[in-house]
Length: 60
Image (cartoon, rainbow, N blue to C red; front, side, top):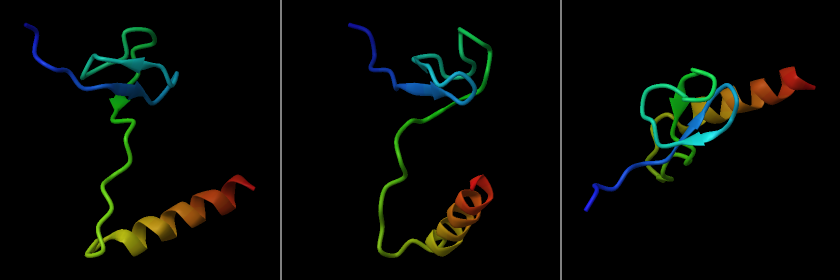
């Protein structure tokens, strides 16, 4: 029986893969496609929301 693997998403071509280090299609870096867990005691939540707002404003 094979061990369970995690799913990753390429940050360049947005393809899903099981490779942990590089995308087999384009060679780009991979990251977890899942959002961070929600916590009411999130120390850095305000900074993350501020960065997200700033990113959205620059895209307009």
